[in-house]
Image 1 (cartoon, rainbow, N blue to C red):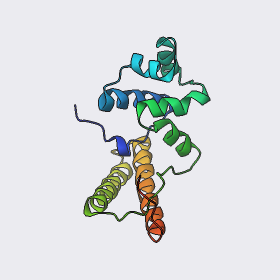
Image 2 (tube, helix red, strand yellow; image 1 turned 90 degrees about the horizontal axis):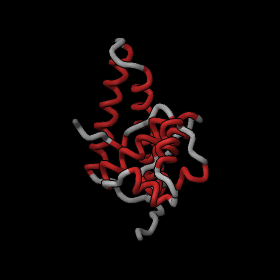
Image 3 (tube, rainbow, N blue to C red; image 1 turned 30 degrees about the vertical axis):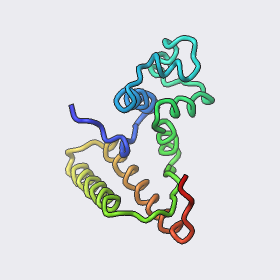
Length: 155
């Protein structure tokens, strides 16, 4: 099974976002659900399974859950359902060839997704996720270019 491209993954439901965070934590940080629950300060790990199954996690615990898992899929989903883009705060650093090449690859991929959608070979949900991810990447580069005149200190 090929690894998921987490940087560009756009969940389509809240349940997908919660499950995706858990999967990311397992794949990238080797954390089990029990370890996630423990780091969140939960007494019983079964409640975490219940929240993922129902898609109903208490809002104050969402940032904690994302922090423990190491990815902000729930925040991405919330922003996308509100018609907003969620981007990392640009630092104003100079982009290297790898950054530009990654952007070009992503834009090429989403163009292919659009062509497949309009030919009836792809569904709307996947296509919208790809478009959202590409827009976020472009918005980050836009902010980075604007911030380039006054770069942030790297800590």
